[in-house]
Image (cartoon, rainbow, N blue to C red; front, side, top):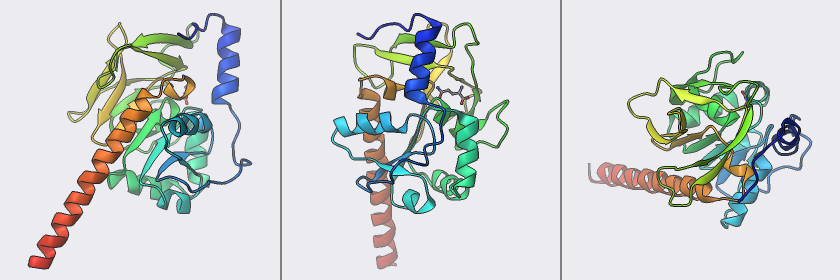
Length: 242
Ligand code: GLN
């Protein structure tokens, strides 16, 4: 079991070490290995990739529209949502990413990534991607407890509870009818949701060694792609016979 982040110093050290605040453009380009991509403009995309690798999936890093074209699903990592929102635009990914999300590409946002997926984000200085019918309240836990760890029961994940790491985390509110709650804090606030093939977690599974959320997302991706292939097949055979 991992330790509680007890002091402010420890929490800040974790944030600096794991989430980071630097633009990651200097890092070598995608290995092009997988069909699951991780948006790699800023934040803890490397940690997502490491956990996926542990599950036998070689994810590619997505920094350009061409790299986005090459993936079937995308993880938007934790980091700083204002920075990622800016870089998504300057990298030319804004339009194609929105279009892919609207067309049903499976995606998972953790913390800042979840904020970007929301339809409404008070205080974000740019429009979010808006794929999920919810409001993300940024930094919902205030300055005094900006980081904490909480054992969390999550729908679709068996015992034991996931040791969820929250760092300046949002909560999800004003959920649309199609949004399913997967986890709440003991006080009732919603911290994990699913809407179709979209997953959002206010916490950071990528900063733990528990890959069960990643496995859950991969199952969602596979379901979505199988469904899409079946629909495509039905469409083609309907076209051929008609
Ligand atoms: N509070 C940050 C934001 O608004 C998110 C922090 C995180 O991803 N750990 O972007």
